Length: 221
Ligand SMILES: *Cc1c(COP(=O)(O)O)cnc(C)c1O
Image 1 (cartoon, protein in one colour):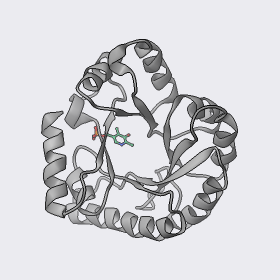
Image 2 (cartoon, helix red, strand yellow; image 1 turned 180 degrees about the horizontal axis):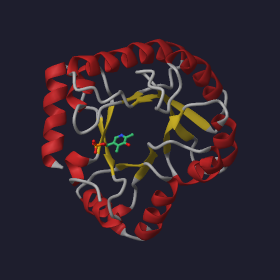
Image 3 (cartoon, protein in one colour; image 1 turned 180 degrees about the vertical axis):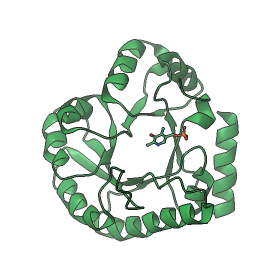
């Protein structure tokens, strides 16, 4: 973890920006790996699958190392899993269509409002989840209208282009969109982008949260 934090610090310093939050992506890693990192002070963990997260939370229940973990859903959310997701996650980073909004709000009955990011398909990849950039404003308004949801910002997974300058251009387009929406929605404070391979580029373009798996945990099973 130390090496990753150092990379984060260096990238933020070079970019002249505050150090972004680190989300440890623990998909396909055992619960013990989560507990180990949590014991070193890591607080935010990202999971891609609702069922896997549920199982991991059950394993870690009562483990003092894992108390206070903040769970983020970063994988595609099917509508029939929205209710469970709203009750077991603190953040859902992958809201990409209107249909999810009332489902999440209705299921978030207790605790603080559910933190929500809008996932944007910034490279317009046919195969990818995420809303079109032009749909983000409407989604933001819908989320902001629900008191049980807290609109926190945007998330993107740009195409893994080998050309790093083109990848960087996608991060830049996200930052432009984020700044436009944030003037309308002052609750927005999070731009989630960048993974193990490219988080320095994302930070240079204004990421406030990076999602790192492999560089923290090693290869997934
Ligand atoms: C798996 C995953 C990550 C982490 O990827 P690494 O390359 O292992 O750092 C980040 N974001 C999302 C949405 C993922 O699915």
